Length: 428
Image 1 (tube, rainbow, N blue to C red):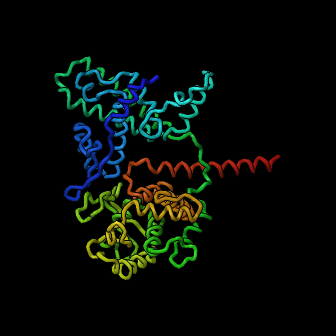
Image 2 (image 1 turned 135 degrees about the vertical axis):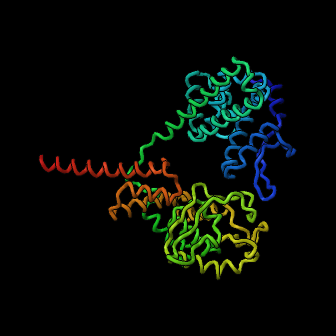
Image 3 (image 1 turned 120 degrees about the vertical axis):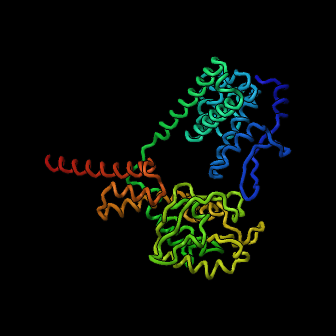
């Protein structure tokens, strides 16, 4: 039972939070206290090593580190001092973190403590297990938290101990802890999902997809938007025709569109930190550079939007990004459209459709359509996968296409099994 004094001390623990800021047009994220001062110079230094990565990746890793720091602060464990002394964290302390990493939010769960009137031990255990199950996070989230603990401990160890003079016992203790965490990370990778998907199921049912394509037309009576109808139509159309990611869409510039030749190509590439981009959360292309293909009709519609809609938006001449904020709220009129605003477009569409849809779902739908078209054209499956990897921006040895290969193989196995069963039934 936690004493009243411990509860009071817990209340006065300094609170930590993420802070995002820009310097020379480069976005940064750090962990600060309530006074906006760095909560830990070591944590700040560690996060500074991530600045070459996509900003969304930095945010995710900073959130994971914040979870780690909050957990051990609550346990009154000074991680830096532990690493300096060579004591590190015990197996029991790590297992406590492992359990906490599977729970929602930052705090550990203690459902039994909140049920003092339940006396039966088995009932309390059942309620406790059920409560933990209800608030458990995905394997990917738990894996990320474990990985952040391991990598932060490794980083601290490298900064606190000389590799040539570190005590062998301390080094062995560090290696043992590191590999124990790594094994748990790998086990979570192997068990990402125990659900078996129906091979015939689409990520967006065809009837829903048809409704979406009709609804998003600027002239549709079912269009749920009061303004920016042409812009939002183009956003959805580019995503489902090209299969590009939300970040790649948000950073598209007028100069990236090939308004010449076949009139159907858009340049997709990583651009680092663009000094012309005023957004704090700067979008970027996650995978390698390639040319995305859309219909010439859609390209003509983009050209019309740029010439006749975008050009009349105030301050639109201050940047080259295609999609801009068309409202003056929060002083963003004429600024490049934020990732959050793109999500907002899909929230409105989801409500209107009665079906949850988001930008990445259109990337999956693109792959389904790609599979169907490739099969109908009789394209060899190896050539089809090479073409898919190029269109998705994946490297040649990427395993990402296995998700779509598995679905196609499952569908083919189903067809073969059905044909075999039909022959057996006919012979009876």
